[in-house]
Length: 599
View 1 (cartoon, rainbow, N blue to C red):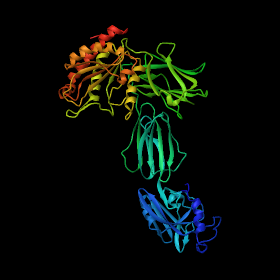
View 2: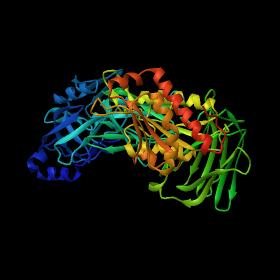
View 3: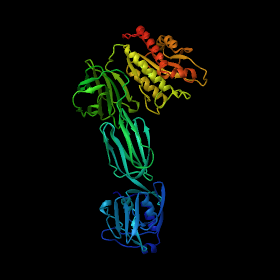
View 4: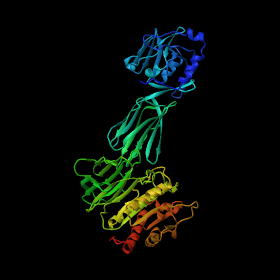
């Protein structure tokens, strides 16, 4: 076990030199024992030790040996300190007795080594009598109580803190637990960092017993551990964020075992109704300016890609509804930019996902393109680096869509941490109304030959909880843009501080939006049966940044009691969904090349 940390050395010799000569000469014992160093015992000085929220006062003596002090074995602060760590401390019949759980340790005067049960460390300053009283080395607190002792530079304060004995992954690889065990209860706090995305756990009062400890997961990569601070101690654990990872923290409060659940969930594929396909072939081959990964499928597939920023630099390509034929594959390249490519069945049926992990040596430039044959995909890894802080970190695409009709992206407004408008009297939120309405609309459109993309199909943030409005809205628009939707429809409920305000409206921004709104407007207003607030032009983010005709629908006012009651009924939502489907059908028949059934 390592000796305790100290910032005392400059101060120590100043204290010794400040002692009266007579006091130094009277200090006992003098000289060396065997090959042990000479010990010059100083006067007793107060030391306040902070441990688990409590301060304990000890009287310690400098010894002239680096990083070592003596404390009276009968000091009343020692039993109190030991009790904080579940131990008993007593001087009995000429020796020290410490009990900790099933462990029983004895230390005698003059004993030069600690017992093997606590590491067998050699004591540079053994226990001895000073002024007729038994004294023990202060550093043996670390061994006997399984703690770490850190002393402040002022020589008046110190910290006695638990050891983090282990940090390991346990359980199933898809739903592992990161389990942290310590010699005494710890508390923690968590927070997230961006660019690169990572989840941080700060363990307050914990000291890493093994600084070289590494924790690695086959998908997450290295979980980084470090001693962020000493005196008081903070150990920091950093988990890299990868697609589909959800981390569930335990309940707050002191504990000797802290377990975080790491759920490796399947990705939420935005495009709907893709049948299961097979990954029939995969290869890595050189090209003029780098390498390319070529994937062949039995039919159309969609994909979601993401990348981690330095120092990780991995690139992920997830293929929902795809089954890898044969065992997992690994291609070693080692060309200075690309280290290796790994392909495996990340998730099995009934919702299979094939994952391609690209291990990059540096932040290499990548590009996804269609292959030379139908239903193939090429990932190019170029011998050029990107500026990580400016890079796109996530995107979507397809080799093609399964249906012959148009592609519509439905955007249920709000969701997850953002409820949108709320009618408290009815207990009704905008996010639940818009989701149910869009799910109904999606079912109708699929029966009419549309390819349906949804920004969300459950109650969640599209970006992440706590993101800014710009980041959340940007994530919604990106799905539509990346998947090259033909039209974008964002569905909302309106609200006003004036509960008398009511009605239905459609909102546009771009010139192409107006044609879409004009086809949706008549049937929607007729089905809603509410006052017609018309087609209004507004620079809403999702309208201004979408690359296709887009419209934002305000179905009715949740702040109006009459309209809120209507929005709360399944029948009314179905009525609105059918009206929107009819309007989209009319738009497709006039402006889209694909064959999509109308009303």
